[in-house]
Amino acid sequence: MNLAEKLQSYRKQKGMSQEKLAEVIGVSRQAVSKWESGQSYPEMDKMIALSDLFQVSIDHLVKDLSADRGALALDPAPGNQATPEESSPSSTIYVRSYLYHYEYKSKATLFGLPLVHINYGRGKVYVAKGIIAVGNISIGLLSLGIFALGGISIGVLSAGLISLAAFSLGLLLAVGGVAAGTFAMGGVALGIFAFGGLAMGMFSVGGAAIASRIAIGGYANAHIAIGNVARGAYTILVEDSQFSVIYADQVRALIHQEYPGLWRPIVEWLVCLFA
Image 1 (cartoon, rainbow, N blue to C red):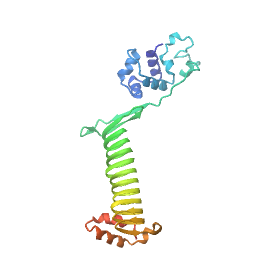
Image 2 (cartoon, rainbow, N blue to C red):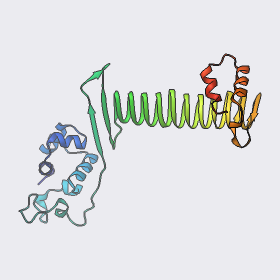
Image 3 (cartoon, rainbow, N blue to C red):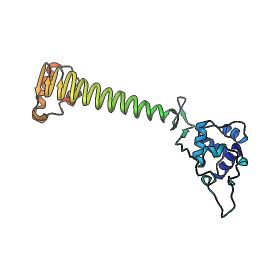
């Protein structure tokens, strides 16, 4: 029995159509048809995936059973059932593969993009593009992936209007281990308004806060600096991080003095730490 015959037999034993096998392995139905008719052979990565799916070794798949007197029939008699593993020599090394791929694309579209596109897997980089996109790399209004780009992006590395990730870049809001955006929150935060362990921006609040205008934190460096260690043109020292002992009116008056045109919500955000 040759490779083409084995593939067809194992597929039928699994109760799978050519379309289903093609979907699982990550190829077209035409490719499966050519394998089973002997017109072409699977590439090595596909051969590994087939080996794992059918639970047989690669050498068992490619070896012609007609020349192997020790080989067992694929359809043993009842009561004498043998698994594919039992039909192979005990010395055979089995190769396990964890390749997989899943893709779904909705028929409904908006602006030429599917409303939902899910395209992810292992062994290859898959890109999803849609209003809602989920993939290894995703691009969409709502985007989830290892690398995400979109209006609202969530991933390991993401960029968008609103971005949440280990490494996050957001036009409006960025939240992550390292975050950069208009409003940035993270272990390291870079933004006009920055809040984090290390915060750098125009207005910064954090363990170490560095700003061009106002900084509040354990270490603060800015034109107006408030903290345990404070450096700037105007400084307010805080003992033992007791920010509540500082009067909000005192801070508010200092900000109005130096930045009289500063937008009121920003002022209130900065003074909310104080009594």
